[in-house]
Length: 134
Length: 234
Image (cartoon, rainbow over all chains, first blue to last red; front, side, top):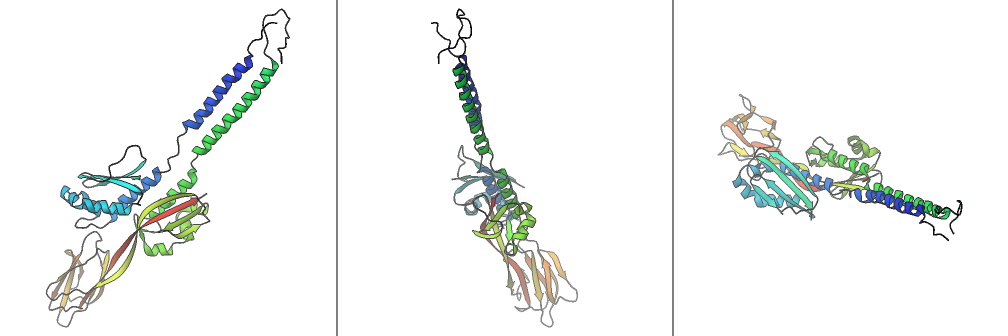
C-alpha cells in the first residue's frame, strides 16, 4: 500500500492559524496603554502657574511670579519661599521642579515618568513648571 | 480514516482526505473567532472612555477659568459665588452636565451635582478660594498726611469728617488724584484703587485732623488653597 501524502489542509490550517494569531497579536500589543496621568498632571502644572501668577508678591512687583524672575538676586532671596509655596499648592503625592532664567528649585526631574508641564512667559524669560507623581 | 482513493489505483498521487479538511476548517474557525475576540478586547481596552474624560476636563476648565461661574480671576474662586453655586448654575455653565452625571466637590464637600455619580472619571484642579472681608482703618493723621493700606485692594471707602476750621481738598492714591474739591471734602467716597500695587493715600489739607476724622474701609482678601474635583459618570 502506498503512503498517503501529508494532508494539505493541515498545512494550510497551520499557516492560517499563524497568520490570524499574528494579526490578533498585533492588535493586542500594538495599541498603547492609555495615558491617564498626563492630562491631570498638565492641569496641576498649569494651575500652579496660574496660582503663582495670582499671588501677591512678598516684597515688590505686581505678582509673585514677576517678583521671582525679576533679577538673580531676587531669585536667590525667594528660592526657599518659592519652593515652600509650590509644595503647599501641589498635593502631597506630586513632586515638582520650577525652572526660571535664573535657576531652578525643586526635585531634579526623573527619567521615564509621565510628567505634566506648563510654561509661562514673563517679562524676564519663561518659567517652566514640571510636575510628576512621586 | 484511511485515505479514500477516487482515482484509479494505478495513480501515484494521494488525495486530501475529507477528515483532514473537516478538522482544518473547524480549527481555522475556532482560531478566527479567538483572534477576533482578542482584537475586540484590545480595541475596547484602548477606548479610553473619552467622553467622560473630555466632559470632566472641559467642565473643570470652565469652572476655574477667569470668566467661569465661580472664578474671580483665573484659578481664584469667589467664596460668595461658590456658596450660591447649584445644579442650575452648573448646567448653565457646563451644558454636558445635563446629559451626564457630574459632581463638583470643593474641599471634599459637594457644592453641586447633576445625577448620581458612582465611580467615573475624576479631574482635580488646584484653586484658591478668596473671601473678601471688610476692614476699617482709622489712621492717625495729626503729624503726617499719608497712610499706607496694609493690604492690596481694588477699592476703598474714604470717610472724611473734618473738625471745624479744617479743610481737606485732595486725596491722592500713589500720586494719582482720586478725590478733589476746592471747597473741602466732607462725607463718604468710594475710591477705585489698583489691586496690583501697595496703595498710599495722601490727604492734602489745611488745619488739624484728629484720629477719627478720617476712616478708610477696604476689602482685605482672605484666601485659602483648596482642591476642586469634578467627577463625571457617563
